[in-house]
Image 1: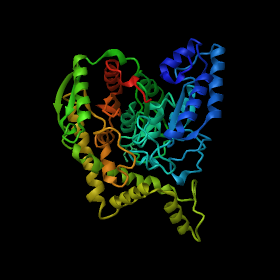
Image 2: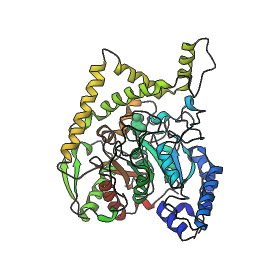
Image 3: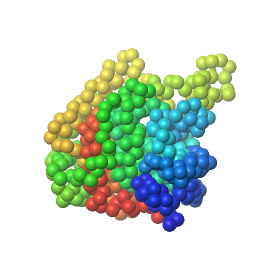
Image 4: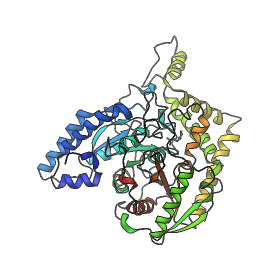
Length: 486
Ligand code: GLN
């Protein structure tokens, strides 16, 4: 039994408990795999091999001493490089943070630490999580493990790629408009964006604060539930974090979909959905019907305004959040200046990439006097309409099923010259962030060239247990999640 990278969190935990393997062996096996593969895939920005082995050894000692261990103890994970980890570089894939070493842990990291997880490293992303292909990273490109000429999706492309390539058991990503689900779909893994407020954002470098959420990227649904159990919950350090009794997300996984009413929004099944994606959605519907779910047609009439609304609100918030990178407090400072203003200008000019600058300009514009009402205020109103669409829908159905993306992963370079085309990759995922509701992407089939296709379930606020249950039922009836790239 040498291929430890074939096992999920839960499988590894049971092997550890039975003392059939050692945590150090698991970590060593992953480090070897990273060494072998990551030169081609390019998903890690930082690899923390030494700390990982030390942490694994601590877990082995606990097991030998007969101490009780957590389900996550000794499990090697990867974390998107926009979450702070004390003492470890956190760059957001931006030159402006190339040397930033946080003096504190993000709350999610603290929670994982309390369970004795093993950190393998920090993963690549689009700079400040702005993008849908990971090509906007200030440092390198990440390739899709299923086809190295394709993008892994984004912005959590590194996190999705490491899970698909078995370079980590699971990973954390962040999702502002689709950045967990879209790369999960492109890479054939599971990605969950929780309800806004369920997972603390403290220590997540802010992109658009009213939309950002951290969530798990895993190889199966049970692992997603396990990680959600650990990372969710109230946090005094995040004023938007909800204080609420939460269920054990693994408890109801096996309850099945019998009697569940699933809505199919007509706006998401339009002509421009790729034919192979449409076939997968059809077959998913049949599978779920066989399991006892009922389907109804619904409408989310403001869907077409989602992308425009998102790119006003997200850029407005980004322009404010990114004002802090000024060369004074931390991060990059241009060496080239004669006075304070010039230092700030040059720092931002040299430190930010093109997409980040585009968004700062857009965001500043929509917030400026004279345009605020026409753009920002209007977008906030449309955001309410989009949320109302969902409230209305969930009075008719329990869940909504859609494709996660309209087409399988696209080629590297295919959309880089046309930002609008790139923005449209998130058309099916953006609305969940605007409405603050949870959504999951799970593997639902493959296109002819072998690229994975993702299916999305959306639910009302705090219905994670329900979407996980439906996702698990579908997963148990199929074997897409068991396939992984050669
Ligand atoms: N692709 C979207 C964007 O570029 C969403 C990114 C995200 O969810 N972080 O903003």
